[in-house]
Every structure is written in structure tokens, then in C-alpha cells.
Amino acid sequence: MILGAGAMQGPAIRIAKEMGLTTIVADGNAAAPCAALADRFEHIDLKDKEGIEDLCRSLQAQGKLAGIMTAGTDFSATVAWVAERLGLPGIPYEAALNASDKERMRRCFQQAGLPSPKFIILKEPPAPDYALPFAYPAVVKPVDNMGARGCRRVNGFEELKSAVEDALAFSRSSRAIAEEYMEGPEFSVDALVYNGEMTLCGLADRHIYFPPYFIEMGHTMPTAIDKASAEAILRVFETGANALGITNGAAKGDIKLTPAGPMIGEIAARLSGGYMSGWTYPYASGVSATKGAIQIALGRPPEGLAPKRRWTSAERAFISIPGKVRSIQGAEAAGAGEYVKNVFLRIEPGSRVRFPENNVTKCGNVITAAPDRKTAEEAAERTARSILIRLETPDDETEEFLKGLAKGSAFPPDAFALPDVLREALGNIPQSELSSGGRSEAGLYPFPGLLESGIRDYTGRTIAESLEAVRALTGRSLSCAERAPYLGREFWIALIRGGYQGAAYIADRLM
Image (cartoon, rainbow, N blue to C red):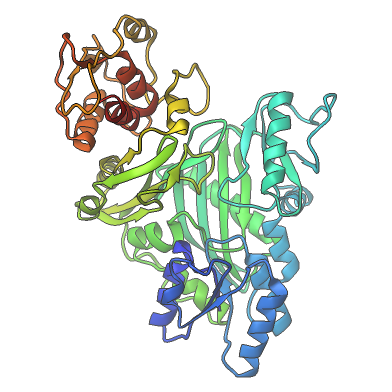
């Protein structure tokens, strides 16, 4: 029995079938993308642990149920509930609650004396005279959600109040947790635990952007940190998993390497989502952590966990400014690129898109694998940039986003951080002068110094690459011209604010 039929559960379904197992897969989404892979699909809310227990009990009575598991979901507690009641391999239900409820998790770490941030639980937005029992900055998140939903950094009371409101909206139990902010890079760890013995199945560098939110724009497997730091991270992770009671199954951790040493972000009783356990670790090591997790769920010792190769696999996301998708260009060609293993699209023409505030509102991901780190990372970043998203015009959300340039730490950020000297030069560029709409061509009023500046957007595109992307999307040459008809200041503001998407939008709307 596998809980979840989304993309993250696809490897588990496929591997279980390759092992000769019959797969019964449950998901609350009747149109889940991997539902058709299952031998039998059941449309059940994964929060309905009693309903899933009833289904599993009937399967067990027929002699058809050998085990239950999940990967990349936050329903490990449902797995443990069923396993405990039916006598199947797994961890105790209380241990699964420890690993899926951030309040319980923090208390377990606190009682064990493990390096973990101070915290407090909030069940309603704080009153004006409220003071945190630790210093700002802080991080606020729901106690019982994943994918960075409702999670953000706050620097003072006003930010705290609105962040708690957002976190409570994402919490199934109407609880938010505020924690000390941990400074330093973040790492993801996957491991399998069999009869209390842990085997590492991946340590990756996470690439987090766009404060005050924590948006993972990718990860690279394996980590590039030094051996001593990696060992310190793994020691903290292992003691943390033990403190939660994860003795049989999978464990996934997010660990920060702070100036004071490793600190535990979170530890879950499952394999990771985010393409790590099912894709980048197998590509990098030649080992299937998913197969090992299935074996443990069947009560068998995991086999073949020794790495067979030492490659690097890189995952990178691509995102969008707000609007409605008109077309997507380059995805098919991207999938055929050298070193590219997968391209995953989360959107299609007609989809509403927004600048991501969590890890489930990105537009897609690419995964590469290569014998060396530099090749894998460059291929992933180049491939992600090659997928171009054109937005429909007109659109109120896009218009509002492009109205003005951000200042400093404003969110969402400008695509390009414009130096003051170029910001001043932008003010001297005339507004667009087009005699009529429906034009096939118009010039582009020069922006002195911009091409030579060397600035890159938040995905690594140069100005020249961004202009080429606009030309590729719109089919217009956009050659330089100081005489009408030309695109002027609106175009350049849109490029700086919204990257190639913003500039293409303005070209489409004005021409």
C-alpha cells in the first residue's frame, strides 16, 4: 500500500511493481498524475487514517497486504497508524506524530538536549503588546504542513503578526510555531533505518532564495562541504531521528550549518520529496533509496545500499512572475539536452502563475547528472533558463507586478538588481512611442551602459540573454533605434522588474 499518487510517489509505485509487488495506491486527488501506474487506485483523503485502516484491514483479511509506506508526503502518521494497528512493519504512531508535528518535534529535541532553535506556539495572531521570548529575526511556520507553505522570516512585530496569520491558514490544527532564525547554509539528508541501524542515502546542498520566504531553487547531490562538517551534520541528524523514535523506516532531515555548528531544522519519518530520494540520489550514487524503503516496509533488511558510483546530480527550478500562461517554449528541446535526465512541468497554457512564496508554486524543475559537479550544475542551470514562459496580455496581476521597481529587500524582488547609476540612466529614457498597436516590428530605444554592466537576473541570465529570450518568444527583432516607432522606458522597466517575461509582456501589449 502506497499513500500518494503524485509525482513524488511515482518512483515508489514503479519500483514496487518491478519488485513483483501488487501496488494499491491511495490519494485524495482523483486525477493524481501517477494514479494510472497503480495496479489499483483508491480515491481516499490521506488524512482519513481510519478509512485507510479499513481498506488495509480488508486487504489483510484477504492475505493481500504485506506493507504500507509513503514518500514525499506529510502523511507518515497515517502510515504508522495503519501499520501499528495491523501489525505491519513500521514505527509507532506516537513516533510518527513526533516527526510530523513541529511542536512535538521541537519538544523531543529540547528534552534530548539537541541543537535546535528556541520556539513558541501561537494559536492566534499576537496582541500588540506581545513579545517573543527570544530575539528577532524569527521564522514562523505552521506546525503541520510541508513544502515551506506559510513559512517566512520576520524581523519585528508587524511582520510577526501577518506571518502568524498566514501560517495559521496553512495549519490543519490551527497552530503556528515561531522559532529562532538559524543563520547558515542548509542541507538535506535522506536515510534508511532498519532495526535502529541507520544508513545514509544522500546529503545534498540546498539552494534557498527570495527572503523573507525560503524558496528552494534547487539542490545539488552530493554536498560540496568538507568531510568534518558533513560528519557533524550526520551525527546531529542521527541523534535527532533517534530522539523522535524513528527506528524502522525512512528519515529525512533539513539541517542548518550555523556558526555554532549544525542545528536541526526538521526531521520527517519518510523519504524526501523535492526530487532527492527518487531522482538525484539514484543518479549520483546508483542506489535506490526507494527500493530500500519498500523492503523495510515489508519487514525485510534493505539491500544494495553501498554507492556504485560517485557522480553529481543537480536539480534546478524555473519560476514565473504573476500572470496567466500563454505558451511554454523550449521544454521539449530541454529534455533532449546533454546530461539532462528529466524535465518536469507543473504548468500548462492557461495556468495561473505567481512568484513563488513556497515550494509548491514553482513552474517546473530540471534534473541533470554528470561525472563532475561543475558539469552537472551548469547543465541544470542552463537547461532551466532555456524553458521560456510567455504570459497572456492584458492581465491585471501582471500589470500590477510590473508597475514599479522594488527597493532593497522588497518581495517579490526585481529580476535584476539595478545599480544606482543605471537606475538614474533609466529615468532619462523616453517613454515608448508607437503610432499604433498590431505592429510586427518596432525599435528598442537604447539603454546606455546596461549591456556592459554584466548584471544577471536571479536565475543567472545576462541582459543580452534576456533580450534574446524576448526575441525568441515574440518573434520580433527589437533592434536598437532612437527614432519612432520604438519601445522605451516601459520596456526597460519591465525587463528589470520581471526579466525576459516582463519585457515580452510589454512588447506583446504595446505592439
